[in-house]
Amino acid sequence: MGTFSLGAMLVAALITLAALATSHTFSVFFPGLLQGAWLTVQIAVCGSLLAVIMGTVSGLAKLYGPGPLRWLAVTYIEIFRGTSALVQLFWLFFALPLFGISLEPFTVAVLGLGLNVGAYGAEVVRGAVQSVSRSQWEATIALNMTRVQALRRIILPQAFIAMIPPWGNLFIELLKSTALVSLITLSDLAFMAQEMNQTTMRTIPIFTLVLLMYLVMSLCITIGMKRLEKIASKGMPRGRSA
Amino acid sequence: MIWDWDYTFEILPVLAQAAIVTIEATAIGFVLALVLGLILAILRMSGPKVGWCVSVFIEFIRSTPLLIQIFFLYFVFPSFGVTLDAFVAGVIALGLHYGCYCAEVYRAGLEGVHRGQWEACTALNLSSLNTFKNIILPQAIPPIVPVLGNYLVALFKETPLLSAIAVMEMMQTAKILGSETFRYTEPITLVGIAFLIMSLVSAALIRLVERRLNLRSAK
Image 1 (cartoon, chains in turn yellow, red):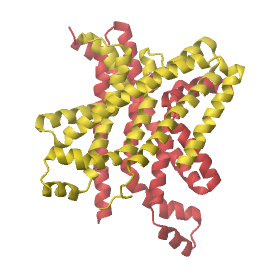
Image 2: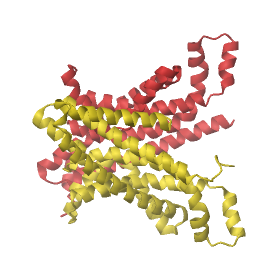
Image 3: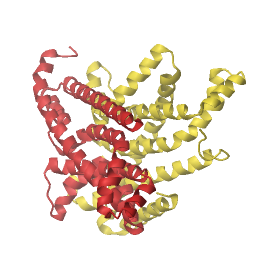
Image 4: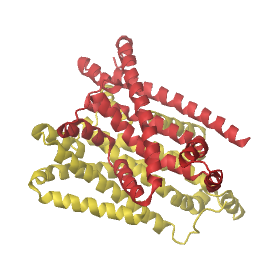
């Protein structure tokens, strides 16, 4: 969808939320749900940061790392991509304490989601770096740059642009996965919804609001990433030459 | 004692039985997603107005969490008079969510078929149903099989979410086993390993299919 349609959807969702906030049936649930939404945002932001760091480090390690480091990166990527995010969260939350490491639920949430999405991000980073044309590498050799210099000054800045759209998808994926942390006792948006649902049994207003709130958050990410892509690719030739 | 082997072997058959439910949910959910995805993709390409409505629907489903959609189907639909069994609600939610992802994949496949193929069918006076079924789809499907395969693995890994509405799949069984004995390490680790093995196997299968298809198209 184009930026315009996305913007229209965001405005429509916000107007619906604002209209519902004035209606008595819905307004009682707003404070609690917003409180949950705030925690969701915190987890999503911290998790995304961790995911970007893990993705970049392990993606580059898989490409250029020395033997053992590359193996470590591949193992990390395969394990976290191969198992379910919920199982990973449960494992960190329930099984890890039995090995003597007890973590706060918030830490578990950020660690679990960040590591999970980071493993997917590693493949994104790898793909983007590999998509930079070979001749760019050859040119850096001709200019007598070291590998690190070439990577930092020439390859990564170009790979960065190619990375933005898939990272946007992953951030949305991560935001949606934050609903899982409600199952490890964190009172995020999904948890608040379930709790309110159990106490008031007013299912329709609660879950409608929750859906709208998640929609607003992910539309913000989509639009933000599109803008970022536009800014980052300023001055770059459109389309990739072979 | 951190790891109890006796307990591990004791719970293994129970978990294996639960794995069948997981596989059932994956299979039915994925078939649903494939069918629904194709319908949505066709509707989306059928006209500007319908297409816009469908793309808003797809965008909506794709940007809200699957867990909330499962809750919505399971908790909200009864108040509209539609009461669903937990397993049915979960499978429908999985199928609907991934159907929207598949719709995008189908669209890419369908748009990848050369315009000339459509025009040739018009020239041969084939009906549009005939064109679509016999000429366009057979060309559109093979290139997207690997991508659809990735979504199969993704859907498979989302099935533990059904534990949130008490479907007795692997995760829910592991949680119950854990709460009975207060030993969470073994059941949850076993579930993790089971998922890892099954995902790796299916990823290898997808790679095999992909190579086969590439070979055929290279000829």
